[in-house]
Length: 269
Image 1 (cartoon, rainbow, N blue to C red):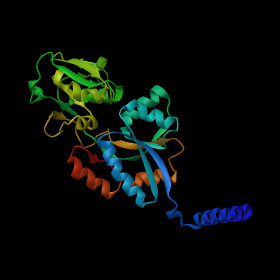
Image 2: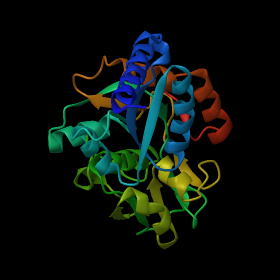
Image 3: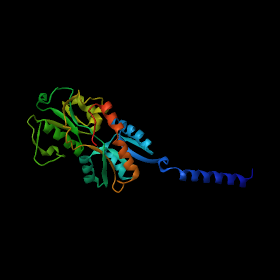
Image 4: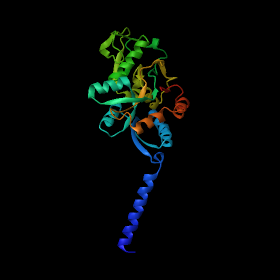
């Protein structure tokens, strides 16, 4: 076969391939999206979302993280198309600190935060001078303080909203000693503390059970800490983003949450 003939056949093959791709129905031309999630329970949920999205013609590449602070940074620098890991107070704090142009595009679930202890069975049993661990980021640290205020352990100054700091504690009758730690370290630090307020994803990763190992749990009704999918400002109406949101807010995902987490993680849509 001559070089000319081989080249002609190859050109014809490529041309036919391109024509076939161009004439495929839009639904058959699969699109892709890269989404950042926290490793562990949130990644488990996202794997179900990925399967649902595939039936809608969307290929989802999941990128797991172990550090909250890195996920919005990756989205901001366009290493991701979206992420699904945070609540509004956390995003607001990140935007204030770093100027991100990131917006919520659809709710996912609520993970009620809990006060865990391996040393006492009730909040009332916390001793004077007890050591309590809380997350060291402003939004989750404030969330922890609000839970402790809800349980009467401390009182917070009026008007401090969702993100109070240790400086905003008005009353601390038991002289609680606070240890501010990275959220992911709190389950490992729990044996050295009297109690710790731990985010549900890290609690699950650390083998803790919100039904058995907590002495207090955040209220679920009207919870302002519902997680959501976030995207860069301007991408809210991208078809891939909308399909991912629809896939997350599906009966399949709701069923998985109920069966797998039994109340530790509940739908927010």
